[in-house]
Amino acid sequence: MLGVILAFPEKRWENYTLPVTGEPVVRLTERRLLMSKRIEDAMTVVRKDKLRTYSLHVSNPLPVSAKSKMEALLRVLPRKSFFLAEGNMPLIMPFLVNYMTGLFYENEPEALIPVRKDGTAEVTHAAYEPDSLEDAINAALAEGYRSLSRITEFLDYEPLSVEELAKRNPKVTLSFFRVKNSFDASFVENSLRDERQI
Image (cartoon, rainbow, N blue to C red):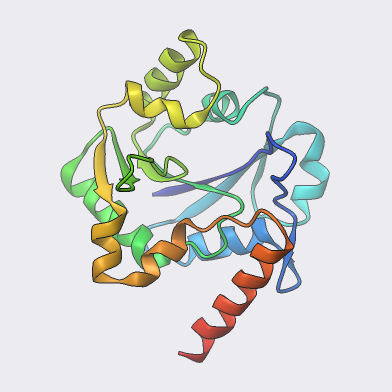
């Protein structure tokens, strides 16, 4: 399966080059995603004007001109099923990605999306079938939505309970952690240090 990393900032706090353990957070995210046995290759969706910056940090940057993450993703949708991650998720757990892609291939839904108890869907930590996602994005855009989280209203997706997964393995929750500032970067550094000691 292909890994697609969204490193396409929409908000001021979204900085995918924030350093964590001396490397940009997007590089760590790519590396950890590629540690998953079922992810063969990864591409990183970046703003066209930031291509030079990202080409130094990721193996396969894909420049896009768009107003939002949703539009950017629509313009670069791969032809085959893919796993989507956000570029500021350096603690993404390879075992969870393997588990999710296995379920995705086994059940063949339009999408497999982790969902929290409060109903929040983790749309940037999910597996997608590209044709269904394209239809969902187009429908969301036609309704005037700009947030990627709104695609769930237009997808027949299989939900995967984050809390149920966390009961089996508490480390699962770290996979959804996003780095937004230097405090988050420090947390990630400590978590990675602890992980290496185990």
